[in-house]
Length: 91
Image 1 (spheres, rainbow, N blue to C red):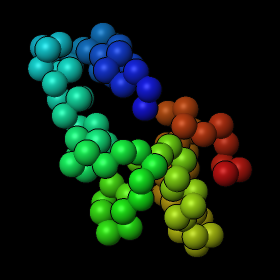
Image 2 (cartoon, rainbow, N blue to C red):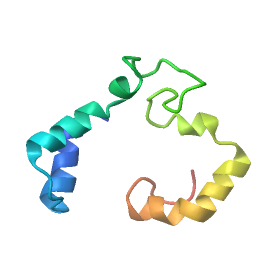
Image 3 (cartoon, rainbow, N blue to C red):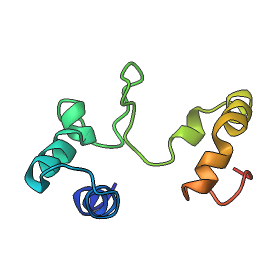
Image 4 (spheres, helix red, strand yellow):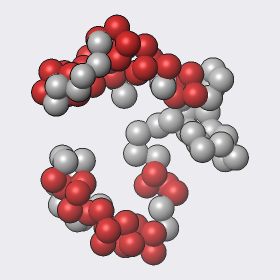
């Protein structure tokens, strides 16, 4: 995510009013970036054995099978639309 601190501050602190100090919030966001969670591995460098596989937005499309995509749509499709991640169920 580009501008992660700025985007998340705006949404979580300014709009949702999370009761967290800005300095502490910034530290939390930075410490949970892909590079920090993987011990320095850069985004795009894949590790199939790690939970944080690649760190590339949209890479899930390469992993989901047709069956898994269908199951995910049935369970979470409307949530993705409601939150703006998808416009419809045609993904």
